[in-house]
Length: 498
Image (cartoon, rainbow, N blue to C red; front, side, top):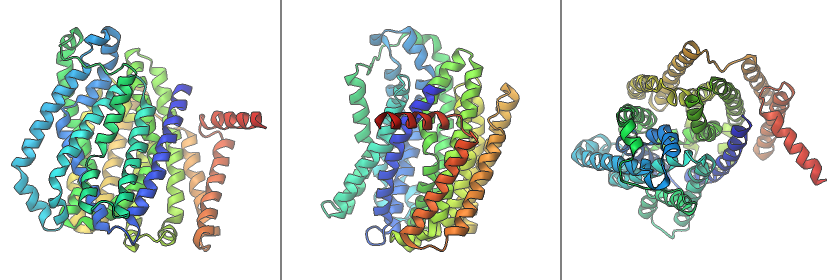
């Protein structure tokens, strides 16, 4: 587990550095003097639609890569390794079909978004290059996982991508580029990190592209096709349930609502940052553990991922909730974003449920029962799409957040029960209860004591006191088995420097 801990921490450093840059980007987007909520909403809607383009183009290729990479790597020489060649051919065919489909249904698209989100219609077809480069990056990212480059891919996707956005934001704010060019450059952000990742793989002699069908492909072709076919629907289902909120809001309300919802979703993403890093690190390790039938290692990863991720998500959730209203006022954000408060609350609870159940999705997805991940993903999508649609019509902005909470709760209960009954795996213990109770009580203490203090002193006192008290409890009660070793190592290094 120390290997995962070290890599997860390294990945988390890049992710949180990326979130600091992302926070600056979000500040520029949401400040009352620079961008309107509907302009921010436009960027969010384009991202969501580009992800849908990627999903329909992928044909299950990323999952094929990280699932079968050990078999190709262990049984083929570099010049004969065709895993990347197969992935590129299949995904290129998928993208062409998707692009043709978009042009065929363009009138329907214009009809759905033309009434409330005219700016989205104006820039709609830029989602094609946007989606294409997301596709290329996902292929190379899955390929890089096999070389244990999860830290690098986290750095690129979480930090380099946001730095690119920061650069073009500054160009726009200083009127070097127009808003139109700014949006176009947003649509090419994945091209930037795709080139960086490809250059790194090439420099290390690990970018092997062969279009000659290898014996591994021939041997596993039926399993590969079956895996691609099923995970293709998993990818579509997963992407649709992520994108549906923005799409429904853009269609039924307007881009301003998309921007406000996107602001809440960005803050919720802070809760999930360690999970993003851990997923990148654990996927190849879990694949290898299932191959070696090492159930003990899988159980250990499951338990530790749960308590670690739950601790982080609760800590960050309460830090934001303590300061939500006053932070918007202090940083002079557009007052319209106050409408995101209860959206953040509901999405935050959803994220806590997701992170608290650990890497259950990755455990199921890398096992021989990966089909179960397909069916539960389809179930989740079948729940969230109609719920989001009807609840948005009924309750407006808060509707998609309620839909997420209900759907993801059911989804995680089903996955939890499956792993428990099938493999005897479950991630919870009394430490789970301890961290929930400790962070909740600490929140109420900080709220009662410091809530009347306004401005920067209030922000610092509430946040600092809450973090210090929670960190003390986690260390004292040894709630996370990975926290003490990290703190002890830091203390040792500090003592050496004296």
